[in-house]
Image (cartoon, rainbow, N blue to C red; front, side, top):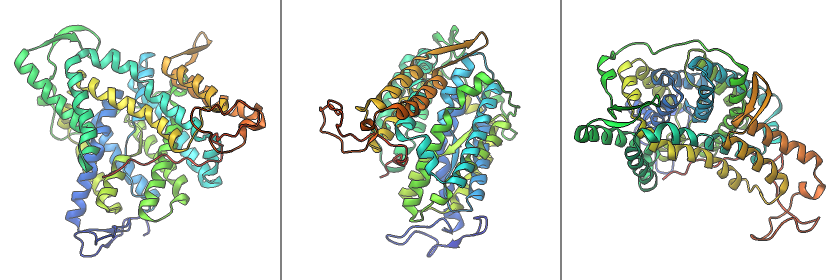
Length: 478
């Protein structure tokens, strides 16, 4: 396929034959391919513009750079790994912590740029030494704990920043979004977060129309009378124009807060590449390192211009599973649409006008879902938390990360929250494993529920060993 930009037409170019799939090096007719590309944009749209808003970055630039990063990814993997790179929600908590410490948007993007470099280097190492080094350094017990503390660390942001701006809109948005996630089917369930935003937008407009201004804190935390939905910026925005660029700045304290997210990104990439390989019938283990490196390069380029980092999106993997179309041509079309959206400032103004109460209702569910992905990794890999070798570092690290515990190193430097929690989980697990007695490290069957696995010295158990593969379960599809 060369660089992955040549495709053969599948069948009649209209629909896949019964039981057949459109492979990455195939495509449907160009009009249908463009339609599929638009569908991929809608699927990634919710998270890709919610994330930069929550991080305080330009949503126009985020959407544009997601298209650029997707092109880089497709070229790097030579068209074998159909995937869309959208803005990563894993960094929302990091951005909140950095800003709470007095950091600016430049500080946030500078810290995340370093994470992109680290992700690129991890990819290079995987290409050189194989995926086993990931499993050895970051077994499922560690990966799950880090993903969990990243998600749950965001709880205070919702409770103190978004929810108080309009508690009733937040509550209604939360209820609607929850119903959409559970009750809707197929494609609509995968864009439930986006539908929740649209619903909250409409409710805020209606309440302004009926009751007038609300007396509550605004986005700056000041108690004032203000409109729930302020669209004044939309009318002033141009239809065509460049997004807002800015250069990154680098601070060690911010970088250390952001670096643990590398673990989450590696887990995401590994899970998504595995899922795509299983769906297409083309084992992609040899492309894992390339995929991770390409994700890192895309994130470095985006943050260097002032945008957010990117990661492979499970929403789009779900679209492929539903349509049975794995053509990379559809992703080229999606990248083209994203670039066009990025050049429309009016679109960015509409996004920036999302009321705080709406974000409160959305983030209650969204942040919790991010955290519980960590628990999903534990369950899927059968991590035994009855084993103290697993339990102790996870218990300590998660509480430190969620509770915002800090460790003052000097007058000008301290570790806390996500960074300290990750260090405790990662180093604690490996140190304890090196010192633990043999019976805690040997593998064996799990005992029946309710039975202690450690009443006797030689009791069997099944801790997650370093050589167990990371297998985050892909999103279910209809």
